[in-house]
Length: 483
Image 1 (spheres, rainbow, N blue to C red):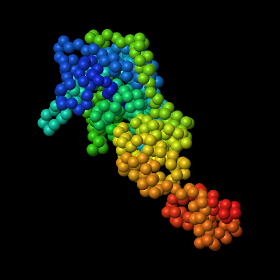
Image 2 (image 1 turned 90 degrees about the vertical axis):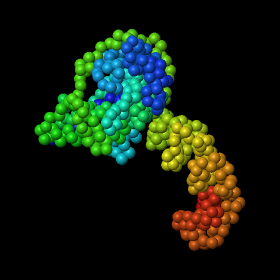
Image 3 (image 1 turned 90 degrees about the horizontal axis):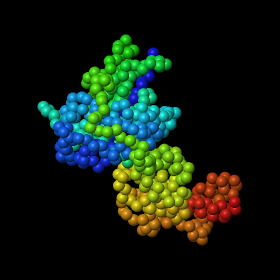
Image 4 (image 1 turned 30 degrees about the vertical axis):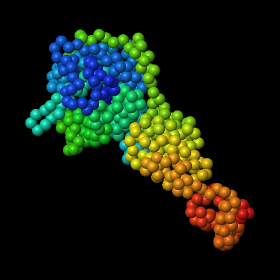
């Protein structure tokens, strides 16, 4: 019997604000432990929370980028549980009236893992529906040592969006593409840095299996401790196979929460899976409902950016880039902006894109902090397009640019004497010399063997050390050979 996986993702993304969700403590990564704290985020008796309006605006902006419906009124609730990372013994979150409902993430064609991209093209453009986006406070960070554990409350109270998908994903590769696409969108909106290494983007996975053709879902397991996009893919591949082997042998899947150990490549049982009623949700009595239709939605809409898919389409239509070039450049917002600064003329854009993708990125630079002036790439492309240097000479110039010389392309050309020979009189003399030295090639060409001209062109290029303009050499030779 063949089985298929049913996958839904719960993505937690920290919102990029100056202060925490319900207090005035600094929202900053990397501070000394327990230095950005106050009575509110420490849960001290009598402390009263006040919502961060900027976090609400940015969550609405995220909903607009993902085509969600924005609630005119939302409220905050208490999710009750006991754990050291939440000193109040409850988390302020949203239960039945979240900020954003519905929406979708459309999978980008090149967001799949590179080794399966060609296989995945058939699924490109697939829409993964969203159930909701709600806003809550993050919990403290636990660090476990050999014999004891430490709690850092700097993270506790950080604004956190939970983006919940429907169970529309079917493979680990689709989950990879979903997270990659979502991360790009969050970066474009500047609502989150979404750096998984810093815990700014975290993911819980719900996965079950069922026989192909069956409508009813199987019993799901939740996977925790997933801190990289590749790790999500690996964890799903293991868990799907584990569940298929269990049910195909007559076993039963238990609803439970499992921990992913990336080093061991296995999942392990943590606890039985909780249900909503276990948390005893109720409206937070310290926080009034929030109206978003009185200015907040308008303010969020004013910040809507051009999204990756829109930028990609514009690069193809207006600048003549290939789909692949446009996808690579649009996937990295900083690199895409840098490319646009360089591509002042549409005629130069494909060449500049080629330099950036095939040469510049090969040096693995920090694309958010590029030292080379963008104008150097446009100047280099113009030198080639205007016939002042050829493609081989352009590679030499580009190598010096990438090495960080700081010199402009024209200055590098002059310094190394790389300019093409374009003087027709000089080229005619070289062509005469080539014909005198290669009478057989001349005779062969004039008898109809047109490929014989290549030997003559090669002679001229060798004589000029590759600096003759190939197109002009071809033109002069043909004229002298009588064709």
